[in-house]
Amino acid sequence: MSPADPNNPNEAARLTQELLDQGYSKRQVAKMIGRDTSLVSQFFTKGKGASMVNALRQVVRAVRGGERDEEALSGIAEANTSRRRTKTGQKARVRGKDTVGEAGGSMAGRAGKQAIKSGASHLAPVVHETGQAGGRLAFTVRMKANQYVHSAGSADDSPGLRRGFIPRADGTEERTYGSSSTGGFDAAEWSQRVADHHGDVTEAMREWLVETGRAVEDADIAYLEVRGWVPPEQQ
Image 1: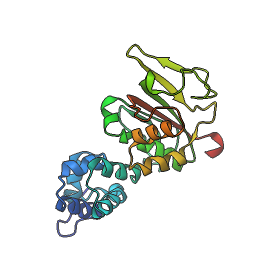
Image 2 (image 1 turned 120 degrees about the horizontal axis):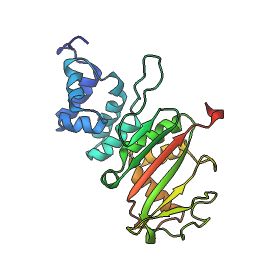
Image 3 (image 1 turned 45 degrees about the horizontal axis):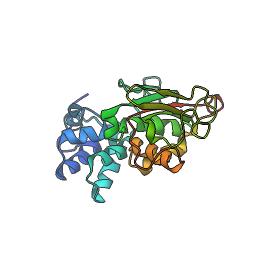
């Protein structure tokens, strides 16, 4: 790609510059949009960044409105990021050790202790992409046993699932909600839930567990897994 014209920067560069003018660094902008700092620099030097324009627009809009929290801005960016496409026009596979699959098809992601603390925002694309494709979701949650309201294996906790739960030596339990055999959850509805929490998948899940009487008010999620798929009739 030829060098960008410094006197006529592309939109990605202009939007990024506005964030820089607001006091953010290129490293912070890169973290918000889930890309490397080197790519952000290439918005200015090589004219790259077309696929990130929508995300950057929404982040800039939020900053103009007074939002300053980087995690919240990251969630907004992820909810508005277009997945790059392959040469054949198909959406590219999601990369990363904690997120796998193909946008618009079967996808899965997991979040451990560190990612949970920051809202597990890298799981948001799994939810949003599956929702846009009219798909379904299933979740696996790990918490301390005493933070669940219902006893392990209870039909009130996760009806229709035979495997019930997985007890662990550290006093936590993994429980699964939804599956392909039970139909799972409407991904579009969950996409809205996650968007309402600015991309914080952890908080969206915690609120759902409490709302539905499955967890205590101060529940602390230690691990979260999201699986998405598109039923054959939706493909």
